[in-house]
Amino acid sequence: MTTTNFSSLQLPDGEIALDEQTLKKYGANNFTQEITTEVLPDAVVFAETIADVQATIRFAAANHIAVVPQGAKTSIVNSAAGLSGSLILNLSRMNHILSIEPENQVAVVEPGVLNGDLDAETRKVGYFFSPDPGSKRISSVGGNIATNAGGMSSVKYGTTKQSVLGLKVVLANGELVTFGGKTFKNNASYDLTDLLVGSEGTLGIIVEAIVHIIPIPSGNSITGLATFPTIHELMRAVQAVQASGVNPSMLEILNRVSIEALDDYEHSHLGSHGEQALLIFQIDVAVSGVLEKLDKLLQEYGATKIDVTEDAGRTAEIIKIRQDIFAAGAQYGRLIVEDIAVPLGQLAKVADKAEELADKYQQRLLLLGHAGDGNLHPDIILEDRDGDLPEGTQKFIDELLDFVIQVNGTVSAEHGIGSLKNAWVPKQLDENVRALQKQVKKAFDPVGILNPGRKI
Image 1 (cartoon, rainbow, N blue to C red):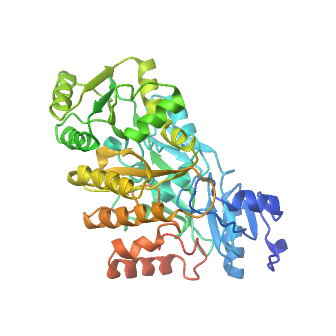
Image 2: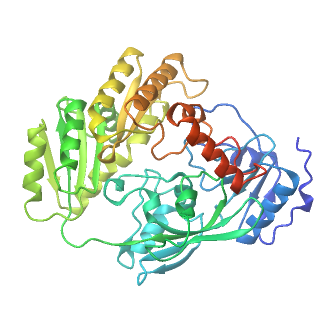
Image 3: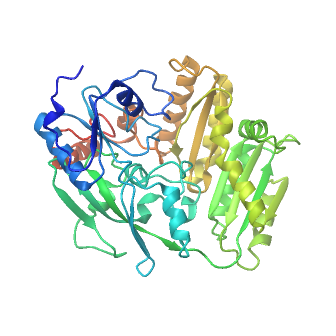
């Protein structure tokens, strides 16, 4: 039981919950399948305004209570789950789109706005919000910023940080500061906006964001599927497409196990002829001759079948294939999700290594990802939905991540570090970089109350 007296925490507009049912519900991350131990926070604060956030942070600082910022609870690396003795600061009620400004090509939003909702609203005025993680429909813009989320279109439009122009942030002492603004260029200060992107709530609480919205491209777009005899040949094709100048807006890959899972889940026939690897691609502005060039290139690198469409209905069906892959894998049990990125020239080598280790440790491997920017998700299907990771699964992860670091890759591309990947940070980052990160953390959060134990 908590010994903290929360009666002195006065919220101008929000609500504080102390009951066990709420603590259990908001203290757990539903998508972190590796964490099976329940840790209850002492309280959950549902903030509705910036003033609520400031009051909460000041109370926490005065009482030396850890604060865990939380948006839509979609973290995969345990970034936003409760800590013992902590207070969860839930921002999901701060979910208002404050303005959409086509004349400035920006939108101003609160952190709890869902990515998909913002995208839908901007499309009504001829624009779109480019970050599109697999969790687009259920993840918040604040969470996307906190983890620098990527997605299927990041191959062309970048990760979330390319869309963030300005932030309002509540610091660890409760002060409200503003970084950046509505201009696309701004060299008046250190780039503290970018510093907050991907910081996972360890430097400040994002309470408002100015994000770039992009005019919907004019002209025809093409979307397609291409099958390959092996994942190795598919990866070499991805590298070649990226070097060809066709400028794809999507290059998504799926291995044989992924194809089989999708066929079971959707009752489709993607693997009916023994297809071993699948590429989903899109070019949202298709200039004259680009389709012929792409077709020739894919065949040169071993594509056995190429299916291309400009039809909106068929395009939606193809995109749904990629969107459904996590549900398709989860139909068999528990899905252990990994998130790596490697130099483009190492894609084939890393894919081969993942398949080799899966065979070695008898793991059922869903290999998928945004291969166009080197981001792969080597995910393991476990039939047992509960309990610790099997020894073979842990060895698969350990050996693969070691290999990723050896080829100058990263153990986290778009999901963050959280607590789940903390042990890998010293293996990837040298001592001087880690020391600098700790100095930055101390400058922003001298008492250490903001999401302690996560990120660094």
